[in-house]
Length: 175
Image (cartoon, rainbow, N blue to C red; front, side, top):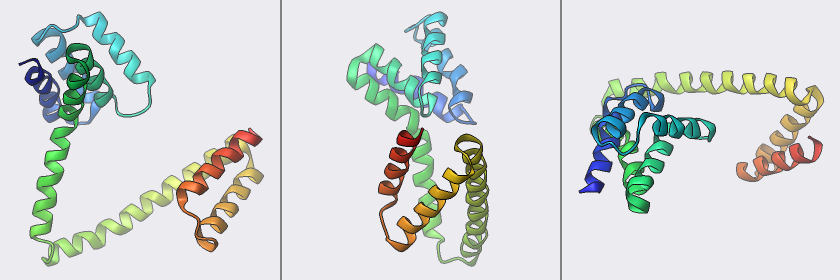
C-alpha cells in the first residue's frame, strides 16, 4: 500500500504541475507534508534545498529521495517513475496521434515549419555559448576549440562524445 501512496504522491503533482519541476514543488509539498505526513515543512524545505544544489530536474531528484526515505530502493524507483510518468504517457499518446496522421499534408507542413525553428534556436544557443566561452577562456582558446572541433567532427569523423571528452581534457589542462 505504501508504494501506491508513493506513486500517487508524485504522479498527481506531475499531472497538475504545469511548468515543470519548480511548478510541482508546492503540489509535492501538499502530498508529502499535508496529505501523507511523511515529512514536516522543515524537512521538505531541506529536501528542496538539496535538490536545488544538485544538477538535473528537481522533481525527479525529490521524488527519488523522498521515495527512498519512505519506501527504500523500491520506493525511490516508484517515486522516480511516478514523477516522469505523466510526461511519458503524454508523449506516447501524442506520438501515436502523430504517427496516425503522418501522411497528412498538415503534419508534413508542420515538420517543415518546426525544423527551421529548431535550427535557429540551436544557432542562437551556439552563439551564446561562443560569447560565454570568449568571456570565460578568451578569444584564442575559443577559436582553437571551434577549429579543432570542426576538424575532428567533420573532417576526421570522430564521434562527438570523444570530441567533448577531448575538450574537457583541454579545459582541465589549460584551466
